[in-house]
Image (cartoon, rainbow, N blue to C red):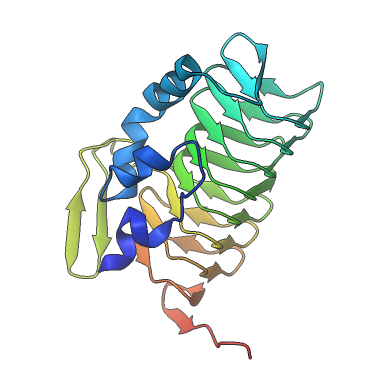
Length: 223
């Protein structure tokens, strides 16, 4: 059951968001404070960052395509690439050396380092860990069809989040295949992989391969 805690899913050391990660037990507790977090960081000052538009701060060597749109507040880490047609709808805190790809949409989310969201992705109300990767067309669905608060189910344990919008909570090195749908509140454990075209919900343990929700295998260690 400890696979679902913030400390288990993420190594936020060195991240601008590290104090906020450390202050939470579960990662969805970060979602309501992302806007406040970004504004606090901006007010305290961001050495090495430049304000390219009001409320939008970028680190060194950030590449932003002319057709990308970034709404404030947003902080983009060094050496990140924002490709044509990317749409950042505000409240985005992105770490270093990430790829925010063509026609991808992000809002109210935290991305740690080396995250790749490269092609036609939707990432809303989500936390993506270091080296997390989303294949082309995979999305983090963040709102239940009935509009009720998201409940996260981990086996026989249910977590009442009290939040209407929770997308995907991807641990470090999680890898999501092309065309996947992560249903609201899906948690992907560290290092786990999801096969393409899979609809996922609930909590996925770390170190597994999800071929379908009925076919999950433990990943073999490579010597």
